[in-house]
Amino acid sequence: MPTKATLCIFVKAPLPGLVKTRLTPFLTRVEAAGLAAAFFADTFALASSCEWARIVVACDGDPSLLELATGTEIWPQGSGDLGERMERALSLALESSKAAIVIGTDLPGLPRRFLDSARLQLAKHDAIIGPSADGGFYLLGLRRCPSGLLRGIPWRSATTREHTVARLCSVGLTVAEAEPWFDVDVPTDLVRLAGLLREECILAPRTAGFLTGLRHCLGSP
Image 1: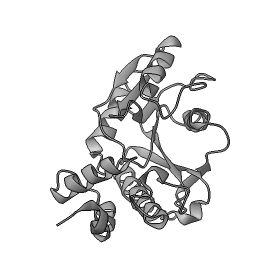
Image 2 (image 1 turned 90 degrees about the horizontal axis):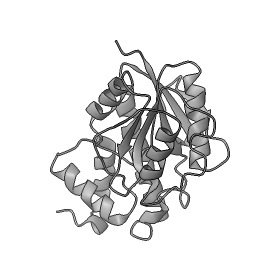
Image 3 (image 1 turned 180 degrees about the vertical axis):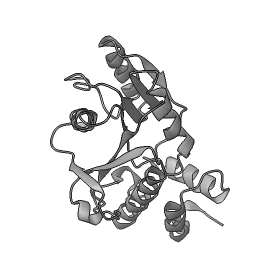
Image 4 (image 1 turned 30 degrees about the horizontal axis):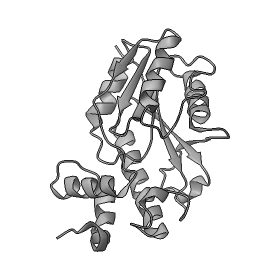
């Protein structure tokens, strides 16, 4: 039977001008920060629904700006590029868990079954990666994390996932692939998200509520 796993949410404190910058000037800096806060709230609620998960919030910046449940475990991301910070968090998580999964917050509406499936796959494989449409990934799960595993990976690239899978395989890890999903990084992603929420194809209550106030730029009826 699969055991509990650490589910680590990677997030940047939602300060105007520092988060979701690729959505400006489509959104104002304040709107982008509000959207980032809503994304986190929905992601945290999703994670909290997973009874198998030990939840950790890995924060870049001031965690007091996040809406957190009392007693939430918070880790600083620390220095370095995304790969160094993720590797640090995964290694720390694996000191006390048999499996660790990292997700970001740019994926509101992600179905819970994706996380449940990832946890189950880690009972059979050393790693699991969730592909996103832009060539990156929205989820990375590991049962072991050799030193330097994510060093030198090109981030924000159309080949990020490809390079990451090659690296995992090069150190002898068996890799499973989760169902694809999409990140919300640029205006076209946001318009797509708004449409899916309106049609109730996906659920992300805090994000949906926030977007109702952005009809001026999303063209909502």
